[in-house]
Image 1 (cartoon, rainbow, N blue to C red):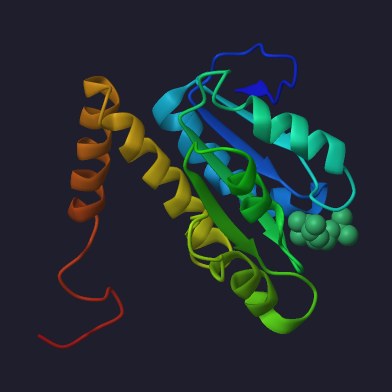
Image 2: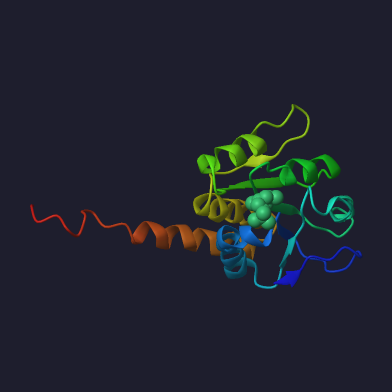
Length: 174
Ligand code: RP5
């Protein structure tokens, strides 16, 4: 994993950003998935649409030139980060609504999902499941151009299927 760069360096294919340090508890689940499938081929950083607008613009405008293929952006509350990144680049942006201290994450979800036509953001579930699935979705995009990554994803899904028991362990009946 690398740190997000704003100077044109790095060369990773997936960029994972969040609006605040406080989003890491959720977004670390995306990071773990990316680590597993991509190793060093992703970066992590904090970009706040409201507190660091200049950083946001530099980051968003530099994405395609740096060779980034997919962005995962997590944010909570008035979650403008994914949408604003999407407004600055044509690199696909996957948005993860992070549950804040109030409104159960519905505020984050609605902020991310209700993009105007013409500026798409792929919106995922609120919280951990959304972070995991956004990362798996990013991996599947990379897997479309990288057979090794695609094969790893196939194995992951097969392992997942294997782990599902036929009956719940607490069930005593036949
Ligand atoms: C958003 O505001 C962040 O994505 C975070 O989810 C939320 C709260 O941020 P903090 O006040 O915890 O830094 O921009």
